[in-house]
View 1 (tube, helix red, strand yellow):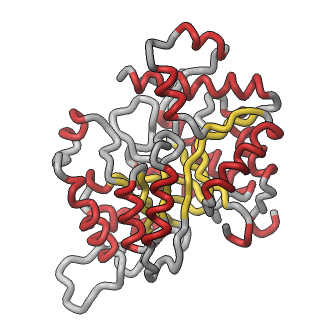
View 2: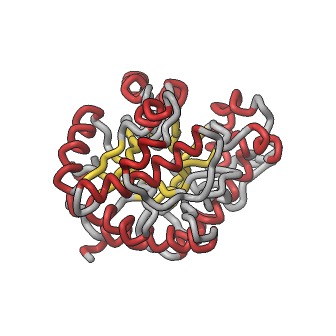
Length: 339
């Protein structure tokens, strides 16, 4: 924890809510990032997903340029770039461009999942076996971000010499072990795939090898946070995410829906769905500030994480802003330059 305090960051999807469109979703994401910067959050990351109607951040590096241009101090990055969808050289060039324009503010989180369905994978021209070379691709990308060697035949311009901080993202022991082997910080996707959280953190910490980028293990964990003035209102806001994930389970993805009366969800479940959804969203902290704070504190104490990556799929923009500002107040985040 930097300075002995818990660092808070945000993973956003530039969610397209019902009645909106991708342009507005991206503008809302930039407005959110501007407020997060003012409230003292450490970083703002966007996710790479394809062929999903509710997510406007598919062209992740392009969207991050829009976010970075509208902010000045908060770190911006990918949570993450699905590296098997791309060549390491292209990602080095894209993020090297961002780092050249916004120096010292860019993170590059890397994952090996497709971030989409098999048909879309084919449309991306992704090889089905591409994830098998993920460790080698990470190292190739890392090499392109180092200063070029004399006579190096292929160079990333922009990119070479930027040494953009890399993160390994994952939800299994594979990512944890790779991050430990390469000496990179590790972000665990406990906000939607929590099953292996404790085993992965243990494997990462026990096997960590110091590197030029990181001298010791550094762990970030994803959680979902929905804060409102009352527990009842927070539970209502949470139903947007529950409905969205239910659509994912049923392969019927749509735009982010408005919240509903939580009791009305009881009529929607098919056998086993509620249990599966509850397991996926286990680390969702929902309620008033007084309700949420001790639960998050317990999670931090149990996991020993250095940083939390917050996801809040809240339909209403004002309610979304309230939730993030309330969380910042709970943890006494400091605005940049004392603002």
